[in-house]
Image 1 (cartoon, rainbow, N blue to C red):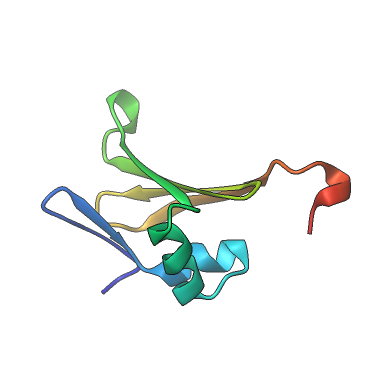
Image 2 (spheres, rainbow, N blue to C red):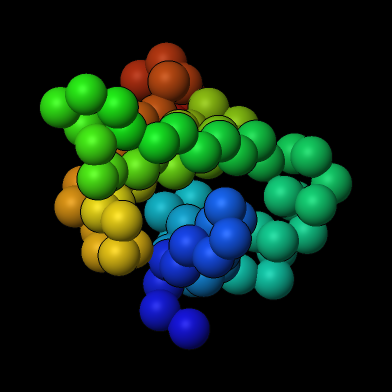
Length: 89
């Protein structure tokens, strides 16, 4: 499997891709995702963004956004930490 695949309307993301951004092991990332402690979202581009899709993961104070093309190639990856500066790890 490549890092991101689309099949019959479903998205499959290799946990290693997102887990590393949160400094988590893939197994821990998946456990947190299943427990609802990591929120995940998927948006399909419209208008000038047709052919792009955005995956969003939120855990604690961090938000990871991954923009991919329809083949699953990563075009952009952004990690934002919303914690106050004095509380960032």
